[in-house]
Image 1 (tube, rainbow, N blue to C red):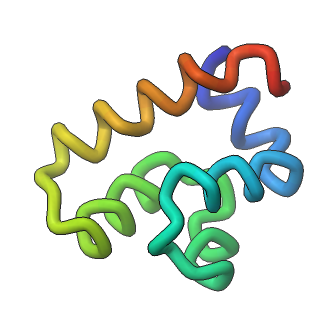
Image 2: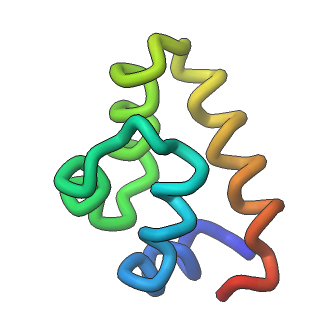
Length: 69
């Protein structure tokens, strides 16, 4: 799965995003609107991680959810 699929199915993927990054609010997830850069920024802010770590977490999320889309 690539990010374009997640972006296209963002409304369906929001629950999985919330499960993975539970400290993000519903409003923050809505704000991300499937934008990978925005999601990475929110993860950085909320979890206090570097950009490369946020990107690694997103890559792991994509790998974990290959069959979801």
